[in-house]
Length: 115
Length: 408
Image 1 (tube, rainbow over the protein chains, first blue to last red):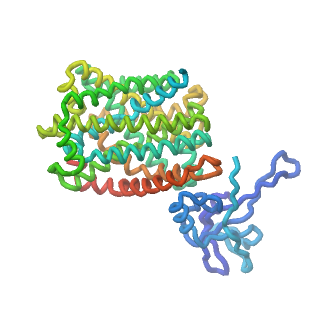
Image 2 (image 1 turned 60 degrees about the vertical axis):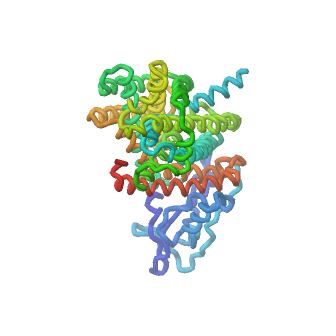
Image 3 (image 1 turned 135 degrees about the vertical axis):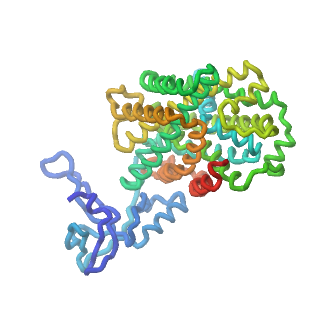
């Protein structure tokens, strides 16, 4: 399965549609045994109740400018939440099923400016 | 001394490089029909291009990312591709207009039909892109383009009637045109001042020239001094047409009418200078739009790009440019009027502008790209006001074009 198949796929819980996959969060561990660099793992998916495209970067709490645009994009993605990978019951052709007890985390990302 | 020379060169090339066929034609058309009634749009447009170029230049200098790399990263593949398609096609239209502009200017100089000049112009553009270094290319076309100062000379030689021009400026003089045409040309003039390729080129040029944070002061000066002075030349072009053509009821439809007031005011010498200036300005803009076709595609798809690389190391970048030049030549070969292509290209520029303005405005605020060089508060307020203006112009452009029958 490709990541591209996952993005925008419908997300179901208990047979009801709760939203669409807006983003996929990856975790890159510092080391993977036998490799120089870590292999990225899927950490969780961001579910947005609407079929809107993305946060355009405004999921990072440190980015709040320009005010009106930031407010608009955050408003457009309101109600979004993060579900960790173990909380997914099934990932298939027709979308993603969440476990009944799947925990909904905040979709915000702490951002610390680094260059 | 060397530093002063570099600053002066930067500012002068910014003035000379500011005008292209879109500015020349649109300002003359507007001047001949509305006088200076639409001069305010030039001012609004110049402030806009200063804001936009300054942000794009800073993002490119600090992060090393040019416009379409940002579009791809920030908007995602799907929306990004729609953006690319629109921006690329409009840039191709502008490229066609610029090559047509070179050919028309050479026709004025030689009396040889412009269609014979089109392949010559395109070949010359390609040769310069293939062989000449970035700095030399920019400086030569920019400095020769400074001859367009002749429009300002002609304007003063014509002895402007300031009370009449002020009346037009303050909308006290009737211009006998419908409100729809007035606003159509307002949008066209706005699109001519804020052509998207200028920003693709400006940000990619920053990467080509290897700018870093230390070059920001120079780049800001080039933009903030050079572009407004270029804007004054736009006003002079409109003023010349307002003083000579408007009283006679002549509406500009050809390039020869654009330069007619200059011939009347300054005779043969000034006319020669202006024609040289027009050739340099359109040639410079043809280079910039051609490079922009390569920049946009290569940056979006992640190909290696740039004139600083040998053509063999950036093969797809160079092939894109060659193909686009050939498409431009093919379009002109149908005999379509280059002035008409120009008028349509400036309107569509206004349509496409929000697509590239928005990602730049967003990324100019992103500390992950810019660290502590993000937009200051005041710039963001101005940036957002302009976003609204750009959006309104974009939405209004096509309906106005249809209602007025392209301003007829």
